Length: 173
Picture 1: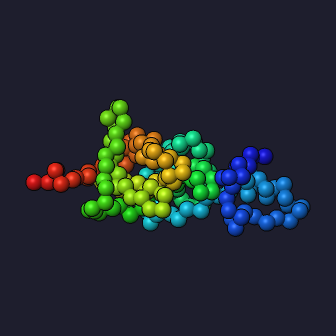
Picture 2: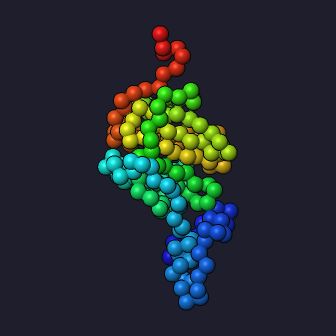
Picture 3: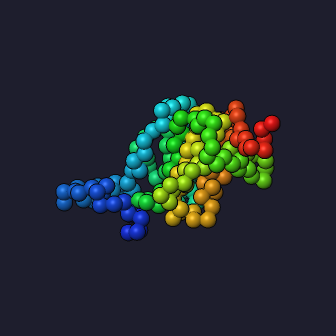
């Protein structure tokens, strides 16, 4: 039977199942694992999203992968401490939001629009279609929420080619 998450990471009571005594053993396993409810992006059925989901790591920022409710999505963690990836979201257009290029030691680079609200950092790929967003609670990665995007950079770059890049005031003539 799957291990239940620690009490601090257990989903809120409203999302847990109330079960009949005869079904307790079976349903506790389902409730313990839980399914992360994630809305699918409009292009979640794109075959490239399937490659992203299949290639996503089994662990992210020290959190185990969890089952999700929608196509084109991946989640890691439990309850409020859940990192969520959605592939097939609407590609962002020009914006004044922060846009940063994250790269690794091998020269793999992915551009991301970065927004933060209510303790959640949302990173959305820029210049790639279908677009991907990753939401990272500050409780999971208080100092470096971009680490989740960095962990996905190689897979994203190998799967979805860049057609555009971030530009800033110094890049425009």
